[in-house]
Amino acid sequence: MAGGLRKGLGWIVAAGLIGLIAALWTWTAPGRGELFPSKPGETPVVVHLLDNGFHTDLAVPRVALEARGGPLGRAVQRLAPGDWVLIGWGDARFYVEQGPVSDRLLDGARAFFRPGNPSVVMLDPAQRDPAKLYASEGRRALRLSPGGFDRMAERIERSLALQDGEARLATQRPGGDDAAFFASRETFWIGHLCNHWTARVLNAGGVPVRPLRSVTSAEVMRAVGAAAALDTEGRDD
Image (cartoon, helix red, strand yellow):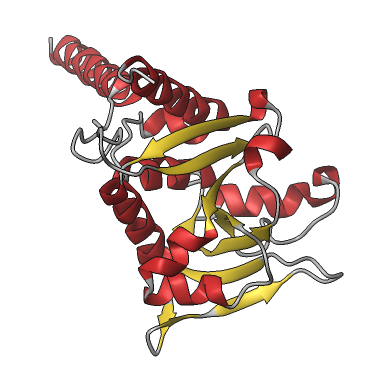
């Protein structure tokens, strides 16, 4: 009888865990209507989500970042020329290094499965408008309200590890690459990947996302595409 009771309790616990996982898998962190989309009469800030197939970056107007000031705005002022800034986040070593992924599989496994890896925020200046540079299948555009943009930028700024009130440059790639990598206070592992970070940054700006499912770039693109479609439906222009 005791064995049957233990078995029954085991099934209950297993069913509870399955239900919890299913709930988290489908749970959506809601957007904020006062932040996104922009309202009539507001001048929206257009940002772009870029997808390279497994990793997402944000393309943000440089002038809007610099106008905010603060550690993030001052870090942007230190970059090479460019009207746009590509912003991403990732492991402090795997994200920065280049070369075939097949040659870096062990380091990738370390970044994924060892908790607490140091991370960096990438700020990469770009001259051309992302709408003209990136194919539509790898790009989504969002019209954030000024308040939504400020909250999004604030969330990016909170990721920076500051030293004497300023973003601390961790490294730059050799060979004339203008991308600058600033130390982040967050840690990278399979429970908090680059696409999770992007989703949380967008959610801070008012965009609804599904946090657990945002492990893939495709899920973040889906969320932004759905939000952008609702924005388009709500406008008369």
